[in-house]
Length: 264
Image 1 (tube, rainbow, N blue to C red):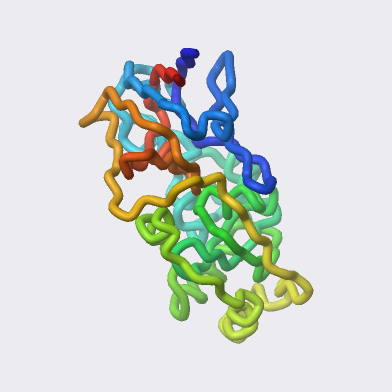
Image 2 (cartoon, rainbow, N blue to C red):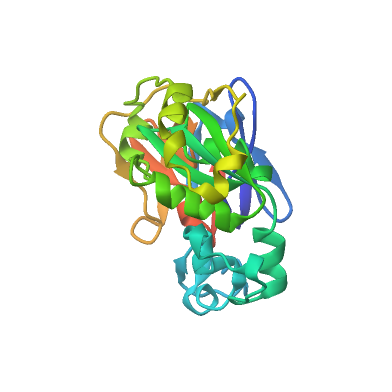
């Protein structure tokens, strides 16, 4: 069966295990059903997620020009403390920025490779945790805009990491943590502006990923270097496909790549 289209981050559905979907313009694929089958991935061209042109992808699925122009790639995306829509101040497109920034946001703890702090829109819970390959997560505060979430994350980063070690995550080299205890210990470091938004009565959320075998030594698939790849799918975790030969493929990191996909 042949699928064709531009890669975007996999869509997910909470379940036991989590369900993963590849969405193309005219089709979609439940990847859980492809476990233990051979996938043939063939890179065809680039397709910028903004302009749609066949231009080399620079970052986040955008060509270089669009990355520096589209409001969907503003600095506040990666650094929420730079958000300014609450001040009625434009970065690239105030209407878009108000829509995205002026909505409830969650500061959370997630355990992917170790416990980390992060920020996401409330509407993206638990999707954000799944995308990071977290097997457990918990909310800390729920604030009304992205700026407050950003300054809270910055304050907590002095006491806990904000990074995921993707290699440890994919090897499943992790241990369970008491995230309720972690949250309690971090509470005194929440900025005064966000302190009233602390979430007292929240328990951990646990995620189960569809992985048959975890790899020990990882080989990362880069479609620019290896435009034609075949491998037996053994698992899906975070935004990664895990293959029998220990090759791992970051689907989200390959957004904007137009591929053909055959499943045998």
